[in-house]
Length: 167
Length: 167
Image (cartoon, rainbow over all chains, first blue to last red; front, top):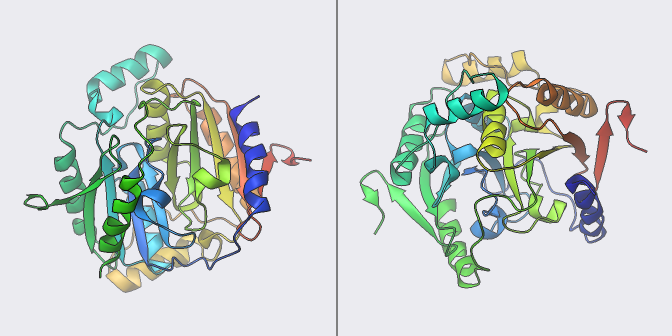
């Protein structure tokens, strides 16, 4: 059975105990930007309820043009005003670098990606870089942003500040 | 209290009952691409366990260069081979259009975004467009993709096929 068939089957159980509809505008006026990593169930990790917050996720949880597009829609069209970043320990993007990854894709497919993989070495620095990119964006209504690193071995979030890890 | 402070507090309860660590490679070899909408808790909706699947989310759940970057990393670096799309009913992107949204951002910030908001009118067509863009990408190892629409009022997923809604 394809994985999607398992998911469609599991969805019937979800719908059978569906908790009810909610408004389209996030109740807590927050957008979360997080890595796509499979070990971060954000609703549980952050204590979110259905309808609370937008959830934007990509490889690394990095700030790209598409992240800014999503945040701009989140704020201008749907009323969010805070941004929370969730990067994490043991990220797959720390196990390669942009050139090696492009080499790997080219060797396997015959095509070299024109975009960078956005690998990184220091996760705290990567959170600070994301904070900087959000603060610099001219399209957002609110630049209120704070960043965290999720420890995939303990489940704990650690806040990152401009000066270094929070006390 | 800022929303992130509430989240950091809630995270302590999560970590206190943390279910344990998992490998970085998704166990079910799936990447899910979904809309950022606040009403879609994907782990519950799809019956996912921690460590099962990558989760990529943006405004609309659309396929952009950043989505392809994330999927390429998911497949080449972390071994996924299936892609599942989750769009949904009552999407915020159906309430505006690209020109009106750019006008709105320009009026509020003085800057007109150089990127399109990627609004749409028919959600089934938007899923089919996402399937087409994934199948055309030269960077992926697997183009095995299926698409769904999540009903935010019932919790049910409906699969979309190339021919129209699945029976």
